[in-house]
Length: 222
Image 1 (spheres, rainbow, N blue to C red):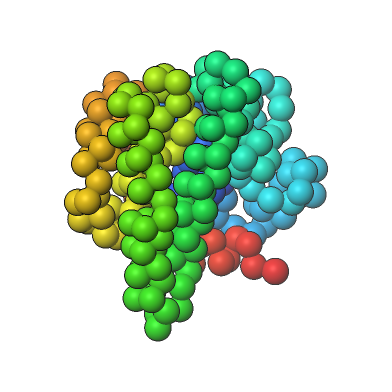
Image 2: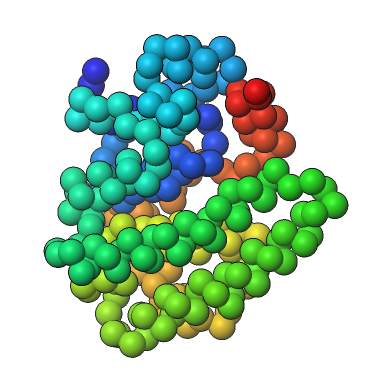
């Protein structure tokens, strides 16, 4: 073991992508193992590596961690991205949970039947512009600071940046009515660790394509 966190998932975004984002934002290098067959996945279960028989799996600090939320809480706490006290942490948790609800719609989108794609895309656009992005626009405007919580870079900022870019891939003009979020996006894009993660050749995964969807269905088939 090199001491770097080791991430086991498919070679695509899915539930591992927010973990990649958080590690990259913290400036942490990591290794990846990609599942390509059902046999690899079954072997992990048989070996007892997956507590609830689910991936993502992240091996870090001698632990085999599963459950995306638990993994991210640990990384955020370890790298000082989780606020200075319980109140800040509660705010970060609320923002992260909200963004996760939006990201869940984006996560499931590639698996929509063809006749539902347009309707689902409209739902993503509607939720982003009417329910989720207005919250963060208001927060940033009210306190006039660069970051969402405590004027300090946190897990919530990383999650919001990932969500903004993911929605923009599908709805390019989604930020047109959100000037604060436009400024936020520019600032985040220029943070050295995030800037590096946004460069070609980084561990950031491209939007899911038909091959990724096929691999997911193959690896996790019942």
